[in-house]
Image (cartoon, rainbow, N blue to C red; front, side, top):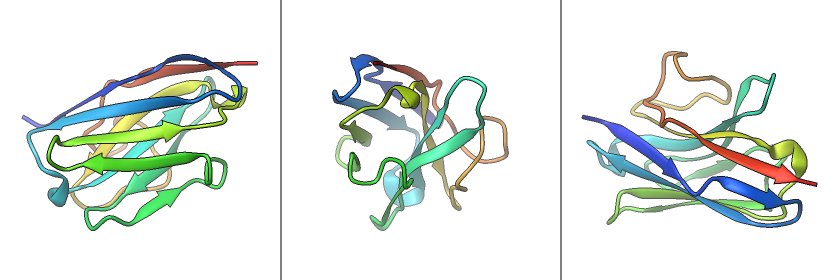
Length: 125
């Protein structure tokens, strides 16, 4: 069974750092592109960052230079290091995988995935 489980969410003050982890099971990273999405209250889901199966990375303009995506293939884990956090980045963060491609926008149930259950990240000012 393919499964993604996020961890590492919580509260952080503006300017602080937080690292999210995603544990994958049921597949290996050479079989899928991986990404992190987020959904802020009242907003659509957006891709924050992604990493393809051959190691190419993408960052949304709003996080480029502050966030870093990485993978540990031996542990089947993906990470998102988030630095210099901003209050507007309060959202539920999701780990997502897809064997074909990951679109820039989309929410759970939009026809790609699987998705993790999501982890809440709150950035206070």
